[in-house]
Amino acid sequence: MLPPFVFDFTLGRSNVTYTDVPPVHTPLVTEPKHLCPYLIPKIEEIVKDIERAARRTDKHKFVSDLMECGAIAVSNLVDLPQREKREERYLQIMKDYPKEDQNALADIFAKIFALLSSVVYDDGRFDDYLGKLFMNSNLGNEHTGQFFTPYHISHFMAEVTLTGELVREKADRDEIITISDPCCGGGGMLVAALEVLRSRGVNYTRNCYLDAADIDLRCIHMTYLQLSLAGAPAIVRHQNTLTQELWSVWYTPAFIMQYPRFCKFDRN
Image (cartoon, rainbow, N blue to C red; front, side):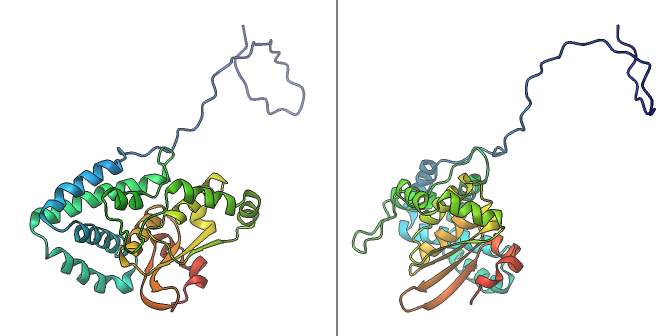
């Protein structure tokens, strides 16, 4: 039988003797995963909701307004200098819809918000969700060539561009990896870049800056939502990349909340 356990603070040798006790093997307790606390919506479910709501209105306009109102809602939480003007625009859009459609816009955006935010959790998955929503809703424009790159292609391009050694060296030195997409579409390629960076152990919220631009305002809102809700520091510009004509600028929450670190990229 073992003697009572004591703390021996004496400098000399203790008189207490102990017998060998066989080791007790206990299973390794791993840290619980950072799981999403809600049921992640499916893109197919959101598409069906849009189809039902858009029966009472033009689907192209409904989706465009959905993206714009969602982007304004996120922007107005942090971008105070532009808040008043954007709030006026939000109210202008909403007043064109009856109460039932206003509720539908809010309910559908809540699901989009939940889906896009889920990528930060261990059981979330990166994807070009809004690009898929756009294409699955049959909103692609074959006359203007507006089709979104399949996500697996975007991911492959990010994999071969953002090599592990390159990004790890920068991250280890706490430097900022800059990525630019001057024709960003819905932001799918930038989302793929974020996924690759995270898979390489890079904290993209601190060590990455994204610069995006497009001439299509709906694409700007889509990109802004996807990058904002993934927690990426980014500036999304509605502009003509060739002529540099600029119409509006959208700062993601992660950019504004870390402005002293990323302000050097704000050339507006």
